[in-house]
Length: 441
Ligand code: UDP
Image (cartoon, helix red, strand yellow):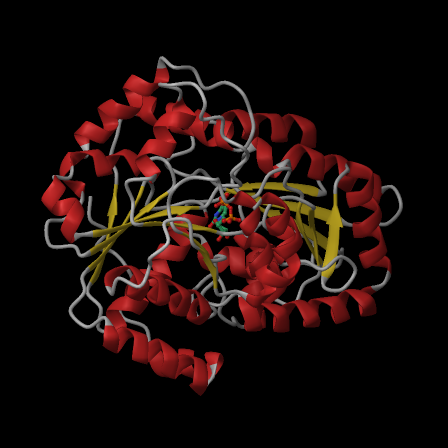
């Protein structure tokens, strides 16, 4: 399915104002070098989750720059999404993937065989779901097209020693691509494919992130029965075990024993996530109809309402136990809020502990940090202000577009020579991750 209901082209002038003239001229220069290149993005869901969030802004932005860009979404039976959810969990270190699931995976790849457009020059495949589409390209197509695999998951060590195992199949597929892109150094597998590090980004002018009037924020919290007089602690996330919404409720209950406050859990159902119903039920059981706990199950296009709820909050929480990057953290920081978040995956790329938020590992730590911020609102405000500037510097759409166009330029203009090159454009990642990286290589 080709996504056709995207917002119109954005005003590049507005982005230029936010990103600054210097960065913007680099982007325009890159777009000029790539004139005539046709770009295609492929993922497995139109709504829900960070990938859809990114593509919703990235695709119109590239078109506004003059690069013809399309976005296609895989279609498949529910059984396929059960399998890919298990695969996703497996890649993040949880057992459960069995060899019998591989056939279901290939069945869906065959159903989507024609998804890669004939006239696309650069095709970015997001995450493992559509990874296998590369198998249906002819040698000529493989030669003419440039294929990128964009991995958004917190990739744990994937065993590739057993012939025919899923790890082995993934590796073989990824090595057919011209390059792969990861959110952080720590996820780089030692596979034979050029790799780039590009952290994700948010769109400061999207409905999710743009400034909105105070009256709209007030109306939104009233709509959901949230008390404007009581401090608000919020987590926005798909209902997924790795986001640990149950742990958030447990932490909240400890905080509320010490200070009056309320918890808002904002979630919805990603079209490719079959497990969310189970987790949502568990969340509701744990919340026990507590009037201070608001469990929201919002439709997938509730961007403005989520924006309003984030802005109404005193503290944003993202107590993940695995997290590829965590756009909800970026969104919270951009709204000037201190964020208490799991010390996992890509979250430490965004939060410097004690500076713009807190990194936590346990329910008790989460409770302690939330309580501290609620008791010291001036400190919370200071942290929030730092977080906003940090996001402005590193995690906005303009930076992401610049990085992606640089990679596209590298692969289309044949700049990559070493098969094992690791290229990173992100100073924050280099400085914070270099030690770990050196240890692995
Ligand atoms: N999101 C949403 N509705 C929801 C839950 C999440 O629009 O009910 C958005 C959220 O605002 C963020 C994205 O989905 O933009 C989640 O991205 P993140 O990287 O935090 O996690 P992922 O879901 O990709 O694991």
